[in-house]
Length: 276
View 1: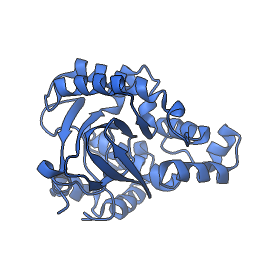
View 2: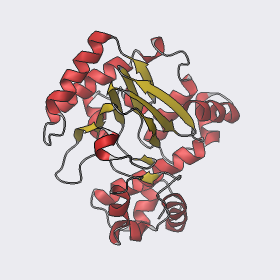
View 3: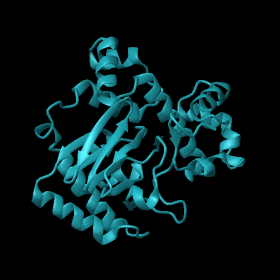
């Protein structure tokens, strides 16, 4: 099992209960650091104090107090550096719940880095502090999520390098169809495949193929979690051409087979992994 360097799967939501949204209070001094990881839940990080440097794909982002960082579903991320006083709120939501809350206008599909003004920061921090580490508070979590997303919608006025529209459209289409390929995207978006690929890699820090593969793996995991048991059928539904392809890709990305992941404790070991 791969635990360092290569992204692993670590779900965001608590493993106990049936939460569809949650807010963690995080400080590396108290919790340590998770290895580079990805999950199906989109996530916002609100930096409450201190300084952090995140690795997001093959890029690095520095964040400070008042910053709001967003990781879309499937985006690998890791905390690389942290000041001694770093403290943040990590806000995550089941993607289907997010879509319901935002009525399909899901800004959380896209990566984000913006600086909040003083009033926006304190309003968001107040909402987060009222419900942090508490299970079963879906309505206030939804209100917090909608508030963070509303702030995120102003991203293009707050960042010097806005995400390209081709990347945004690609993420939307990939979310709806994990089988989609670059040539199909090129036809739908009326742009050269090479241009779509180039902008996607620049904006996401991942190649389109690598990101699509990860989303397919997450779709596979999600279907098993929802109660499906026939791995061959699930592989096709998740976007793989066959179960043999799914098995090969799953093992290549996560370092373990699907059956070992679900049945031999590998998933639990990944979930509990922390870097020294």
